[in-house]
Amino acid sequence: MFLTDIFYEKKVRCPMCETDYKTKKVLSKAIKISTVDSDFYTTYEGPNPNHYLINVCPGCGYSFLDKTEPKLTKRRKHLYQEEVASRWGGHDLTGGRSVQEALVAAKLAIFCAQYVEEPSRTVGGLCLQAAWLYRETGHRAEEERFLREAIEFYVHAYETDSSIEDSGRLPFLIGEMYRRLGERNEAVRYYNRVVADKNASPKFVRKAREQWALSAEEHRRSG
Image 1: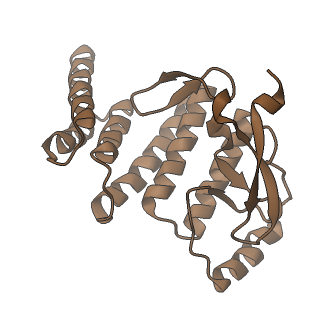
Image 2: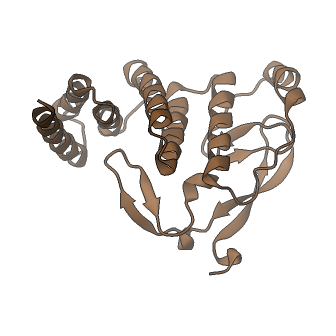
């Protein structure tokens, strides 16, 4: 398969410094899913589109997901220019990315999302993305560190953001991250929230019950 059959160049305008640039993305026809873990971590046959989700401006370093729309005031842009962009080394992450380069992009996006005060759910998603990338590298300690960070932001979003309507996906995911960290009681608490939610999707109710049972079995084995 040729590179032209795998990637395309997406035109991006940096919302921070308004630099126009192109960055590589994986073509949908080149995405072939191999496996999906219980926390939605996905492995692929061929290129990993997750390596390219985050746009990194080569001009100022501002990093963000396509789906986010940060509210950037003139003052915020000025502060970013003084405090961050002035120290940006001009790294170019617009081409092909290794998993290590994808991790750099993820960490930049986490920093930028917090800097511009993106919602907790957005920051949590970026932390989970970093955890998945560390799972890809086999670095368990760093994966767990970012899973804990993701939980912190996701729990804050779940408890405080009344606009969230995800049919049980978010509490299920929180429970599943807790289970992966060996914190069974917290995992079960969030699985139960899914099961008790009358508006939860049957799919997530089923998943919560399955993972509750798995957690109980793991607890017996560790006995």
